[in-house]
Image (tube, rainbow, N blue to C red; front, side, top):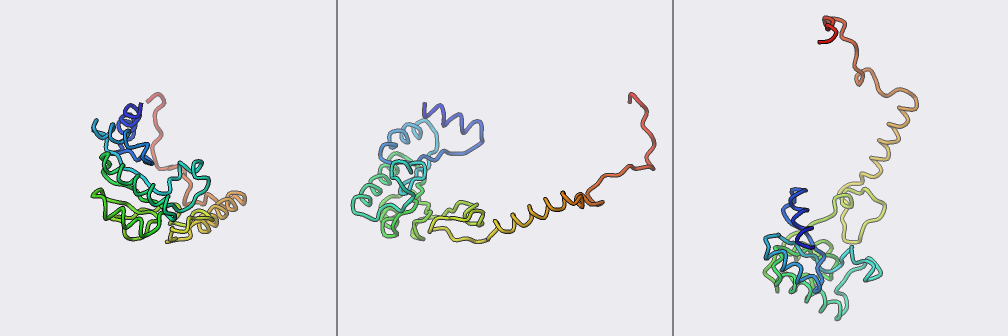
Length: 182
């Protein structure tokens, strides 16, 4: 079923790969997909879709047991054939060890600058929400700007000052009349 779903997703969306939150349990699925030509990106460390397993949205790899588990997951994901691995919300020294140990490129999100690349969730970095994870740097505060724009729009609509003449179409009286039925 994983192959059917992945190939359908690629075909119907134009995506070039799938991303799986990949504990060791997912290595067989990753290998299965890769062997059939489906490019897979793995995801280790803090896994948002597994929040119910961990009970909280918190950094991983800060204890010896979590560290060993996360490192094993990264190695299993790389060995299964993932073309890259997202390393999310892990201690910096663990992110460094993962990046040094595996040849698969690592993409950090909350894993310091030691990974091969970086990613942030766009709405978080643009400041669209009140809360963002510790590892997010806000590059803008668009929430307030958007709220202000929406409030202004709603006010103008209620006062009937929008649309203005510049946004309204008018009859072109210089155009010849069209014949009916044409």
